Amino acid sequence: MKKALAILGLLSLSAASAQKVQQEFWTIALSPFFDDEMKRLVAEYEKQNPNVELKWVDVPYDAIEQKLLAAVAAGRPPTVVNLNSDITVKLQTQGALQDFSGLDKKVLDSYFKNALDTFTFDNKVYGLPWYWAPKVVMYNTEIFKKAGISAPPKTVQGMIDAARTIKDKTGNYGFVPNINGQNILYLFQEAGLPILSKDGKRAVFNSPEHVRLLQTYVDLQKKNYVPDETMRRGFTLATELYSAGKLGMLVTGPQFLLRVEKENPKVYAQTQVAAYPIDLGGNVIHTPLMSFAIPKGVKDKAAAMKLAAFLTNDANQLAFSKATKTTFPSTKAASKDAYFRRVSDAPVDQARLISSKELAKARDLTVSVPNASRLFKAVKDNTEAAMLGTKSVKAALDETVKVWNDSLK
Image (tube, rainbow, N blue to C red; front, side, top):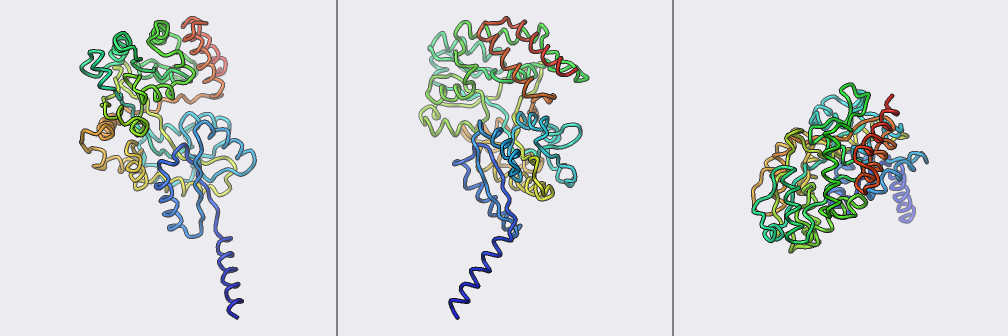
């Protein structure tokens, strides 16, 4: 009799488990650093929704796009997926995402408008904003001391001048400009230079001012003030050099301080943090923004919207910021928390305070255009050609603009 009851109990548990709705959310490159926070989210959501069994999957950044497209093609997409604005633009234009039509307006109103606008196309929202972190300048005080530089630069030109001085006097590179891929488009906008005409129908980033800005970086590379691998390895190269004590300044979001602290505590101890040098022409800081999106093929859209709204609500955005120590919420209420105004001498606390003051100037400057993948590739290929000297800057920008305008017609 006891055996029969035990078997019935096991069968009941099995049936209860089978009745649960299986949901899955993907994030980008958060493990193992934030495993505890992700597990907390899973436990909390399952507690609030006893009929749901939620699975968290973390995916490397360079694999997320292809993995998601493969899952969509196979008819097995995650319920929601963490994407940045660049990938969101590309996947939305490919029809690989669903919009959030039907989501409660109160939820949408909880986010900063400029954050929500990043994922809004044709008046439809394709992603709920999650976290972001305005750029700061981490600088190695020992390298600055050897170069005879007493204070961090406050302008872009000042940063370039400091980079020349650092290389000339110490042999180390001053900084690695983030100009690979489509990043030159962000530098143009930070300088107040437009990418598209006011009606959005023509690319206009081949003016003399655009040429002059890109030429500045081409000249830096020609004179060995910028590493040869800049276009190929970009930010990865910059982080490696800085962590090794071989770079004067690292321009990045404050979250990468944690990597420096782990990889080289000595360099971390020598690090101080300054505000990102504002180009007064644009008075804006490109700040990449993460979101949660709903892939095409998700059958229960209402459930997906509910999960995305939970992951990005005020309480969970604040908790995530505290877990990362260096990222910021995209919701209005969470961003007002006193946590972001803490003052101390620790580089991480310096970065958090400085970034919190920059939020008013933060914008994700990703350009939304049809055929985004092809157009961004034209930017990448021609910028590389200009940096390598196989094309003049003017010819490179002229050719890129032609590709864009042929597509925008």
